[in-house]
Length: 339
Image (tube, rainbow, N blue to C red; front, side):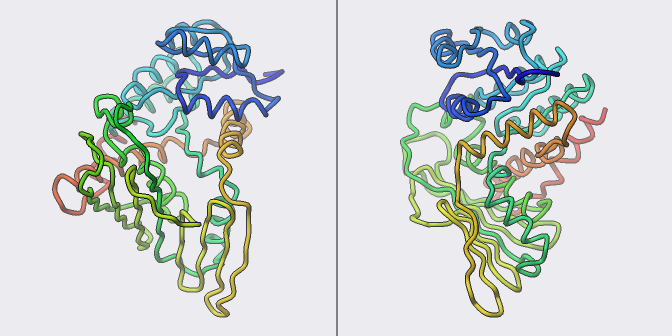
């Protein structure tokens, strides 16, 4: 594979524009084609980057102009689009969540495996430098044994009329939207999640889906985590992840991060905070390296399936009011993917 990596894009909405901004600063990657059922949206975005325009993902995949495809459409469309594309021998980077349930996620993974192509779920926080640095600190024992993690993604956003709050399109509300990030962050920093308990807050906005959820998680290592997600409450915090160990603390912030020595109490700053464009660029750069056979997927298919299963278990917990085992969703799906 010589020359710029040719990346096709399915979906021309807001998240697609964020990817286009990231790719604009990457000479090693070229957007070769953009597909959207809204021809005007696809055409407008394609005109900005000199890409060809398509009204179907199949048309884009069959055009012979892509080395791989990025899928940024709403969640309920992911399974069919991804299966169609990987069945044509093209690797796919699919926006989170991979799918709306573990069964369809497993079907996507199975299709990619059978056709020998790469399938990865986009998870931008794995490519934030401060998050990467924090993970290394944890693994190096800089805060001792990690015992607790707190993750906060809250803000006031009018979700009325948006597809994210239409369950027939999104698969749920703020839990599947922002909670998918939370699930993958917890797994990335603390390891596999065994059980979850989720509580939906009384709705503030006039929506048919949840606009606020607190997620409690227990990991296989014995650590605990709490994730707060809301479209309707703003918490004015400088950090969005805190990891507490028996010998120190790490705070990952929007504008910078720091580590506290549990013995001396002294704080040491590190990093520059969260840079969305840089995270997207790092994610795309990694994905292209994987497709070229130069690296291994991050997150891999098992990670992606686990994140879907965590959210599915969380919705079961909201319905039952009890703790839910993630394995109850993962095992049948994994077995299906293996067949």
